[in-house]
Amino acid sequence: MKEELFVSGRNIPNVDPFLHTWHWPIPLYLFLGGLAAGILFFAAYFTIIGKEDKVPGAIKLAPMVAPIAIVVGLAALMFDLTHMLYFWRLYTTIRLESPMSWGAWVLMVMTPISFAWAFIHLREVFPNFNWPFKWLYPIEDFLKKYKVWMAWALIPLTIVLGIYTGILLSAFNARPLWNNAILGPLFLTSGLSTGAAMNILFAKSKYERHLFGKIDLGLIIVELFFIIHMVMGYYAGPEAQKEALHLLVGGEFTVMFFVFIIGMGLVFPAILEAFELSGAKVWAAIPALLVLIGGAVLRFLMVDAGQMTRYLY
Amino acid sequence: MRYAMVIDTLKCVGCSDCVVACQTENNVPVGYCRDWVTESVGGTYPIVDIELRSERCNHCTDSPCVRCCPTGASHYEEGGIVVVTHDECIGCGACIESCPYDARYTHPDGYVDKCTFCLHRVKKGQLPACVSVCPTKCMYFGDLDDESSEVSQLLKKRNHKVLAPEAGTKPNVFYLI
Image (tube, rainbow over all chains, first blue to last red; front, side, top):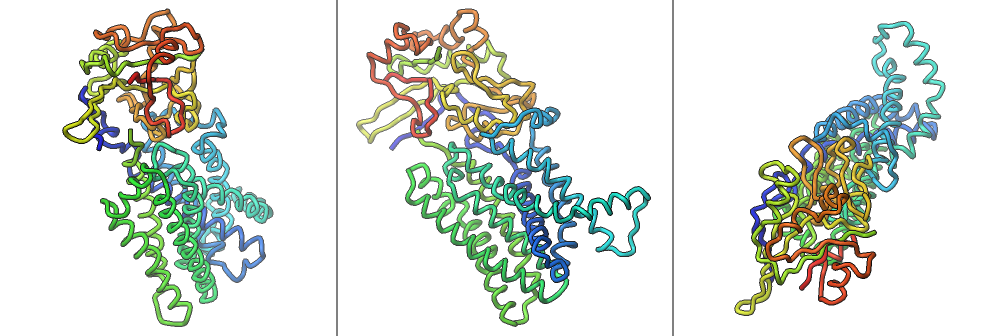
């Protein structure tokens, strides 16, 4: 039994009694970044394998969401910087050791591509829409020629973005809840799963809806495996990690973890999707929306709970 | 050169003079502090053990804050002292999250701030403010690479520990026990 007490009256805002330096903008950004990565990954993948006609929703319609998600996410990220006017310092250096640095650079490349992708499909999605300026037409034709190139570039970029949202957290060994190797793959899978869920919402045909239903179902099963592995890792880990797990199992985040993430966010939508695929009448938007909410709750839980965990000394 | 601080927990009385000296020397905003005193009570009643520690940034040899900083604002200065360049800090909070000792905080002006081992004083050949005012003289500062220095000698002679060695950061603040 050991009790620690600050006797000099330390009470620093957002650090004591427990760390709360990252507020809601960070998990929101992690969710939106993963979502954009998921949407663009599927758009790029199905473009490369030449299934453009079969999944128009995933290639043309859903990617309209991606640049919006990225911009809102980046705005949230900027909002959480406390020395905001110096944000350009991110781009005066490349620091390979810092996940945040290469995340910033990946976004620097990916944001314009996501805009270009939405730009070349905008007039296909809204056939009555015409560009207000004539000089936009040649740009559109030019970019369309390089669509497959963009798709090839998006595959590694989206995977790096998806994994980075997790590695950003797992790189901090000071926070035992974050410091596990599975968090990167878990957030990537969750990002792809929310991307697939978005594609279900925007599906143009039954074929497309069922295709992404199957993909999402597979991803949810992988995600559940990752979560089980993560929890087993905490149980097998040192005292600090066991203490961290206590927040999720028996502690104040128990309901959020078991009900909203595992139950409502993964298992229940998986069952609904399985029913829908087997021909039962289920409104496909319900599991898709649940997966999206579950993905967001997962980010909020990990960021909030992780900051409460620390080394014990 | 490897600067280190050695603090004798057996001599510390927890007066918090080091905290006040630091706040005065470094113009730390009201309500914040770069160092602090902890009372750690261990054991089972009636055999209990109290340890008083003056804690601060450990100026780790393998600093996670320097590793995680996306702009290079957190960096090593002479003698391994970890310092934040205010004009390069964007206030992302990565270093605060990465510190196992919770030694960093966001200054009201936006940048991240912490103990500098009083680098400005050390450069002039003076001791850090906290060390220089300690009324029980329980704090020592010096170069660990120099075998004849006071800190090296103390660590050779006395039992000592560092905080959270399992975090793997190789801290440079040592506690004599």
